[in-house]
Amino acid sequence: MINYRTLHTDEISMELFQNFIRHQTVNKCLRRENGEWVVREDPFIDDWSKEDYELLVSCLKNTLRTGGFVYGAFQDEKLKGFVSVEPEIFGGTQQYLDLSSIHVSEDMRKTGIGRNLFLAAKKWAREKGAKKLYISAHSAVESQAFYTAMGCREAAVYHQGHVEKEPYDCQLECSL
Image 1 (spheres, one colour):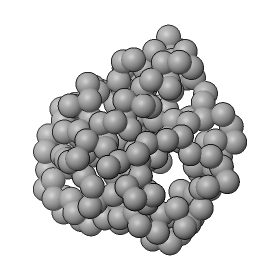
Image 2 (spheres, rainbow, N blue to C red):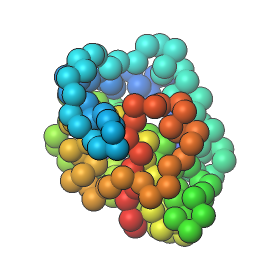
Image 3 (cartoon, rainbow, N blue to C red):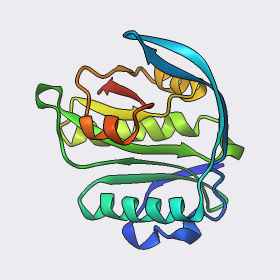
């Protein structure tokens, strides 16, 4: 059974992620070429180092300290998925809130956890007055299939900070 709950600053630590498997084998990605999105072979393995987890812990704590949302999925009290949304609305009339992360442990993918986390993020963002979630999303075709299934489409307005930080990400939005 999967249990979902809001996380608090004091419980976000390296230990929280000890049973979380970030690993993802990527073979094909979306790439923008001549104004069109195309699928390209781009094989690599996406995994997080100890330093990546330390940065994640710091970022999630900051999200909570600034009034954002961090929500987790647990199986047998072990973290198996999480989502975070930043608290500041941006994008002018688009009224975006930034879905800054959503990840499901490799051993629990395709079980509905991602969908439930995404729906919780949408609910929280709607309650905060946003009109849309903004997602700077991994370009792997599997990741993009998830976002498409959740009703996401290309963002009307790009967040330049995200584009500069992750130029291969797909900039998406999802109406609330």
